[in-house]
Length: 257
Image (cartoon, rainbow, N blue to C red; front, side, top):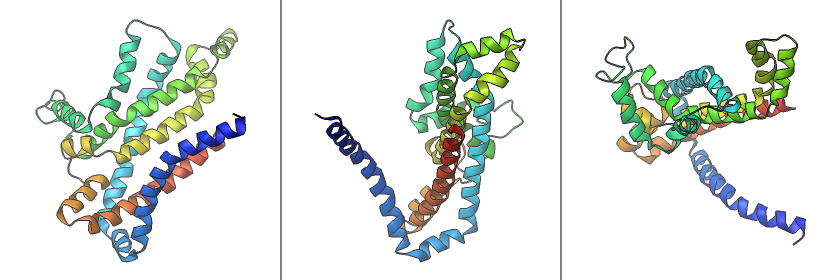
C-alpha cells in the first residue's frame, strides 16, 4: 500500500472517534440554539453564573497547587532513579483509575470533620470551597505531573551540566535551563489539569455538595426539573470552557514556536 493510501485509511479510522465526539457535543449545542430562550435564561440566572464562576475559580486554585508541588515531583521523576520510583509513579497515576465516588469517600475520610486531617484542621472542607479544591486536585494532578515529567525528560541533562560547570548551582540550573525548556509541557499540563478539575463531579459531590459547582448544579436541576432545565446550563458551561480551553491551547502552541 502506498503511503498516501495508508494515511487515508488511518485518517478514516481515527475520524470515527472524532466524529463520535463532535456529533455528541454539536448536537447538544445545536439543539439548544433552536430554543434560545432556555440558554438566555441560564445566562441571566445568577445562581448559574455563580456556580460556573465557582467551578472555574476552584479549578484554578487546584491547578496552582498542582503546579507548585507537582513541578518538583515531576523533575525528580524525570531525572533520578531511586528505590520505590515505580511505586511513586503508580501513586501519581492512581487517581486516574479510582472511581471518583470512591475518591470522594476517601477524601471525606481524610478531610471530613472526623477525618484523619479534618478533625484537627481549622479549615473546613465539607460543604466548603477547600473541599471542592482538594477533590479537583486529587483527580487532576496526574495530568499535570505526567505532562511536566515528559517536559523535563525532553531536556538534555547535558545542558544542566554545562550550566553547572559555568558556576550555576542546582537551583539556578533548574530555573534558568530546565524550567524554561520544559515550560510548554508544564503549560499544557496545567491546562489539562484545569480542564479536568472543571469536569469533576463524582468526588466533589461526596465531600462538598454545597456550594454547588456547575456539574453539581446541572445534576441537581436534572433531578428536580429535568432535561429542559439542565441542558441550557450544560451548553453554557461547554461554550465558556471551550472558549477558554481553545484560547489556552493556542497560547501554548504559540509558546512552542
